[in-house]
Length: 112
Image (cartoon, rainbow, N blue to C red; front, side, top):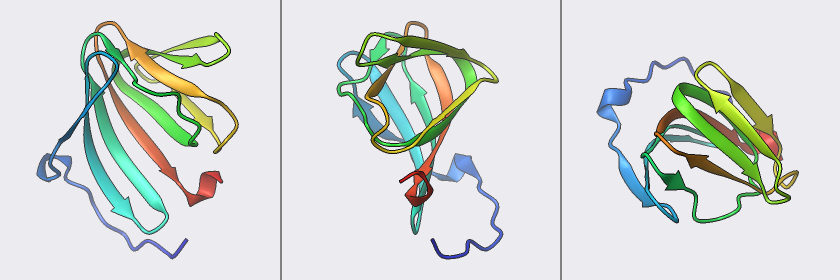
């Protein structure tokens, strides 16, 4: 990864993109840098991801609560102030939320 110079991020200037789930909708604000993606992601109430993800992430819950489901049936409940991290190809996971949630998600080459 190339060095990243200091920069501040005004998330209010980054447009939201809509990503439908199996149910509900995810709204992403994405900052893409070489080898690094940083997102603020909001899942609507009743959101269930439409796929099992095997990508690595660093996920921090900013508001609300969600369940990170593993394809093997294991579940982890995360709420405001909690985080998880996983490298690429080490789990099949998806997010589910009953009431909605706001997350900071960081992924990139450092998780390979």
